[in-house]
Amino acid sequence: MAGLVSGLRKRPPKYSAAALAWKGLRGQSWPRVWRDCDLKRSYDAVVIGGGVHGLATAYYLARNHGMTDVAVLDKAYLGSGGSGRNTAIVRSNYLTPEGVAFYDRSVHLYEQMAVELNINVMFSQRGHLTLAHSDASLRTMHWRAEVNKLGGVNSSVIGPDEIKKECPSLDTSDHPRYPIQGALYHPPGGVVRHDAVVWGYARAADHMGVETHQKTEVTDIVCEGGDGPDGKGAGGRVTGVRTNRGDISTPIVINCTAGWASLISTMAGVRLPITTHPLQAAVTEPVKMFLPTVVVSGSLHVYVSQTDRGELVFGASVDPYANYSVRGSLEFTEGLAGHVLELMPGVSRMRILRQWSGLCDMTPDYSPVMGFTPVDGFLVDVGWGTYGFKAAPVSGEQMAEAAATGRTPKLIEAFALSRFEGGELVGEKGAASVGH
Amino acid sequence: MLLVPCPNCGPRNSTDLRYGGESHARPDPNDASPAEWRAYLYLRDNPAGWLRENWYCASGCRRWFSVERNTATNEFREPPLPGDKRGGAA
Image (cartoon, rainbow over the protein chains, first blue to last red):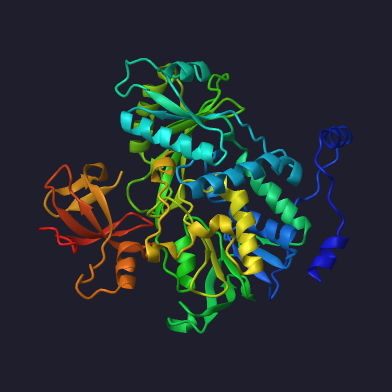
């Protein structure tokens, strides 16, 4: 029924330069992009978390598998969590063959996204430099470059002279305390306008009949047959969710939250190998373009890119202790400024406009936890640490396939929760801890 | 800034300490099942609220201690206990 209704609904106007000029000249306003719906009593599937991962999952459920009776629930507004707090970097130069294949698919989907979703996501593939300041990190760069080449990903190790050519503002001399010895250069890497990705998926999913429910907080997950209290836990199955707007019955619940992944999974009796840490980021005042690539330094705990508006966007590593508060700290700004000046002494007079933080669900091996859990019908797409944004399209595609077919797709087999039982961890710390 | 109450050194900035994560009792290696080891090694409660956790006073007394902190508000409560359940000397 829902599919029929969505098929009959008038499609909203396409975004284009001509439409912009036409509406601008005639003073017309744009229609609302997605609907506000009443919460139904039952859905074929419920996605918890209205960020890029949840919306992408709902989009691919509808587009690839014809499942349109889907609700996306978010306790705040769409894109209010990590989707709007990340530093918008996309790349695929990972360390493990599993990681490289997975993130490369994501880069591929990002390349098609603007056309597919009819929204300008401003994907700027400006190149990505991961700097090495020691023999050990240079060795890891060579290792990553070889794994990348085997996986068909464009990556190579370059020396200080070539780095200077790509990025003249970097200090490649031997004056700094940790001189730059080389870098992993990854030309397809770049930045995306992250809000547009959220809006694009929400709009496209809404067109196909998916309902997005904002300000709808999940308070409990209803299960039966499990070995824990209230039928939760291993061996049971999901029958519905409770929210602050009423109860929903559904056979499939997909946890696409970040920051709250452990708390939501606990509602179904599933414990996760996750601790939540905030990650802080900051942005400077806008200046003329001078930084042509994304620059990352794992040794100095900093990554930086310049937006199209001219601001420098910085990020760091996660705060050292588990925390659910998103308050900033002076230690972060101090450390960041010191490290950035080590790399680019020329920016010493720039002022930081603001800083913010987002919650990162860290796993022991710096890889996500995706797919099925011991509770039937409860799927997780969590543990996205500091690398969730770049993986959103492929995660949505693969999670939708898992939920619709009941089988784990090959691309995410390595990221199953059960890998911790057999000790088959996918160690990505060398490529993911600071290298966003 | 987070002031961590070390039982020996008093309140110290968190940058002086090393975070040791959630405090869990270590299972007995002689009779623990693989599932218990897995849970001890990897699975975490990760609550948004009160959490008993371990800290190492790296720049001070160089001892481990365990303390309760609220992970949503960063308040500490009750006097911290010296030593931790991972077998470190008090």
